Amino acid sequence: MMSEPKRLHPVAMILNILHSFRQWLVSLLPVVILSIGNGRLLFIGIFAVVLAVFYIGYSVVSWYRYTYWIEEDQLRIEHGVVIRKKRSISKHRIQSIDLTQNIIHRIFGLTKVHIETAGTDLGIDAALHAVTMAEGKAIHDRLKYKKEQGSEDVFNDEKMPAEMYSSQKVDMTSLLVAGSTSASFGVILGILGLLVTELDSLIPDHYYSQATNWLFSQAVQTLILLAITALIIMWFFGILTTVIQYWKFTITRYEKELFMTRGLLEKKQSTIPLKKIQAVGIKESLLRQPLGFCTIYVEVASGALGKDGDTATLLFPILRKKHALSFIKELLPEFAFEQMNWGRPPSRALPYYLFRWIIIPLIACIVVAIYSLEWFYLPLAALGLALCIAYSQFKSAGYEIQEKQLLIQSRILNKDMVIMPHKRLQSMSKKQHILHKRHQLANLETAILSTITGRRVALLELEEKDTERIINWYSYRKQHLS
Image 1 (cartoon, rainbow, N blue to C red):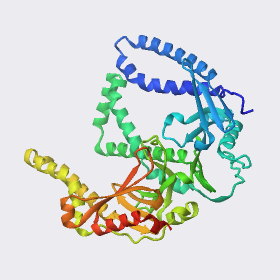
Image 2 (image 1 turned 180 degrees about the vertical axis):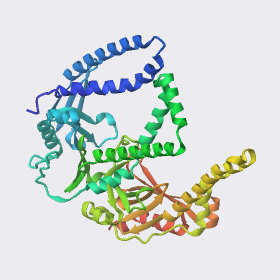
Image 3 (image 1 turned 180 degrees about the horizontal axis):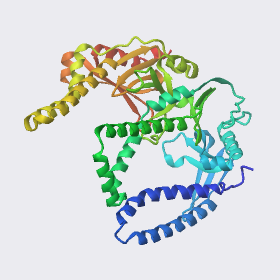
Image 4 (image 1 turned 135 degrees about the vertical axis):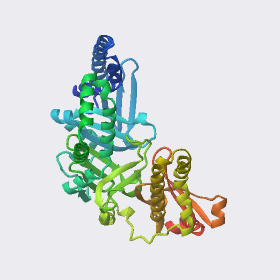
């Protein structure tokens, strides 16, 4: 009976202990490294054992004191070892209920239930870290749907009785392309660089000296071969990371929600209510754009940033750009658009784009030319790169008004097109300084509801008459929304 208080599965204790140990390991590792050879390692070991015993005991008591149940339309939770806390979450405030399975969950046939509410206070969200799969699906059904509706078994591919509009899956070829062009390679490269800088602290001096002497004694060809081999290995791990993360990525459109499932080692199911979607974006990275691939994302009204500090929610990890329009028409017809006829910044706006990027490299060129001419090629190369970025930003910038939607395309490094319905726009402003007025230019800035602060989309140095046209389209609500 869901109306009676229940405890989480005992595996929740294991998950809590592992999470605590992982945090403390990261915190204590630098101390352990610094303590090697100074006689304090024994004291740190004793401290670690005492700390481990404390956390194990605390996790057991915390699990025992954590109870949950469903009473009418409320999920009620009581927890706390010293200070007891009671939390009630109304069914009508719940925006999404996601089920996640990591390796430990899958071994024991469990799942994690994460509940997101409509508020901006993270404290009112809830996560049941380990319940049986049947219990997790029952909670999902009871809190998310009306009694006459069924549910979707997200890990056994059973369909909901509710009407399904369409579904899309990522094939293995696209996953390999996504991994080959993802940012995982840069992350792995950074981690490897950090480890290399710490090698002299971890390896005994005589072994470190021998390895260093051997490395410098090799021919240039050998060193190049070693570097290429290391890059290939890191590239391979970047691909592997992406494949594991987005394995069998599937997105399905239902009447009021989008359901996404993915993951090889950790299976995840996410729900995006359609009414929370504020904008749809198409992003082309520097590596994917020449290959004709893009990523689809949505801006979702929420009170918090993602784990990576990002405001956007990934909708589809990789897709051919030429298929983006048909993808949106099929899964999100509310945001469908026709072929664009972009309104562009005028040619007299180009100096503004160039100036923003070249001012710092230009100053660096002057300083280096005065004090150290032999290194002049470094700031000069940076200046050339800045000119290329500025020009690509100018060429990418544009806008399009299509009935009830505003499309804005811009670029920092990646090319980004955002589709914003009129009714989702929170504000719109026009900004000008003296030089802008002289050249009849203006900056346009829009805002949509995303995080607590919202997301702003800007278009720089447009024709002044174009900014007025967009603002008039936004202001005359009755005319354009009737």
